[in-house]
Amino acid sequence: MILIFFGAPGSGKGTQSKIIAKKLGIYHLSTGEILREAVKDKTQVGLEAKQYMDRGDLVPDEVIIRVIAEKVLKGDIKNGYILDGFPRTLAQAKSLDRMYQNASIEIDRVIYLEVQRDKLINRLSGRRVCALCGEEYHLDFKAPKEEGVCDIDQSELIQRSDDHVAEIRTRLENYKDQTEPLVKYYQDQELLVRVDAEGQIETVSKRIFEVI
Ligand code: AP5
Image (cartoon, rainbow, N blue to C red; front, side, top):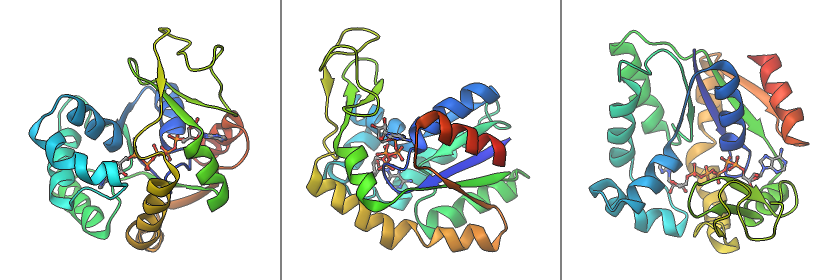
């Protein structure tokens, strides 16, 4: 099964992809996580991507397409994964379609997580991440047991560099200009399924399961 989780920054793509991938026993491929890992490891891709990510801008299509092409066509994951955060531009979507056509792979569903803009800002500015294991928290909705400390490994919780209000606004503008046009693209292909992604995390997961 190949699913694409689509939506604005903060709509819950990462949170829900992890839950659903675990339940279905399929892989979770997050381009944001892959890029943050590359930045941490100071690889060539990481060095190219960092300046864009810090500002809240999208990294250039040719960089991210190269990264994703290496992952999605690999034998071990080819038949079951959730793509979280890709595609985000029309060029990326078309390039993915070409890769899949050549490999006779089909997308099963594009799950579109819908959340109002003011709630997105609140979700992103309240997010905290474990510096060691990457576990995500939210100051209001998913607070750690002890303030500023990861429940899993007791490491420090930090704020992502692009989760400050100015960078969040840039990300939301980029989403509107460059990513939202994909709603029509996938609607025209009859792959898009809208899911109300407001409410508790477990409630949203149930809604996604119903449409899958
Ligand atoms: P990425 O990491 O993908 O960032 P994003 O799309 O901005 O997504 P987020 O992780 O911020 O939000 P999300 O929708 O996953 O929500 P989440 O579940 O985390 O990408 C980062 C950067 O990498 C991009 O800006 C770009 O530079 C680059 N990049 C990545 N892919 C690219 C591509 N294809 N092309 C070009 N550049 C690319 O939840 C957010 C918060 O809300 C959390 O704190 C969570 O706990 C909370 N939350 C989740 N669900 C709920 C709920 N139901 N109720 C309350 N709180 C909730």
